Amino acid sequence: MYLRKTTIDDAKMILDWRNDETTRNNSFSKNVISMDEHVKWLTRKLADSSCMMFILVDSDEPVGSIRVDIQKKTGEVSYMIAPSKRGMGYGTAILGLLEEKTAGLTTLLGLVREDNKASGICFEKNGYDPFFGEKMVCYVKNLR
Image (cartoon, rainbow, N blue to C red):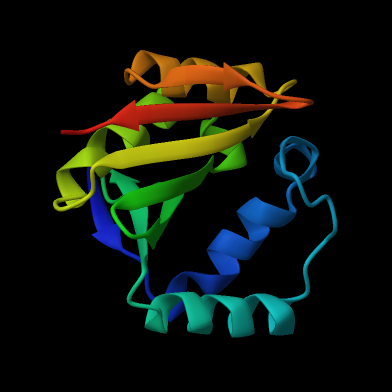
């Protein structure tokens, strides 16, 4: 398993994963996103030097995506696993592999809906500490 950089060619695959009903239910934004809107967003993100985006690949098959939005030395993590690959340990794996790509960052954090227990478990298995808020949990990991 490894992480490769996201490209614009990944747009349809990522959008399909994002618009999956379970993904939307676990997201803060539950709206279905159009292809046009998604391509504009992805193009901006890929050009943004304060954003890193990767695809998790297992046996030559894309199985998840992860994004880090960086402010100063802190990275906010957002990830999703392909609907057909959930429950197979890929959430834990994608978070673990991400740390190899975060040189220079001192902290990673992920915001998770309180009812998204599976994602919370993945963060905790990777050493993130939970901080509970109203209807969400902020998972924080100090890297250095």
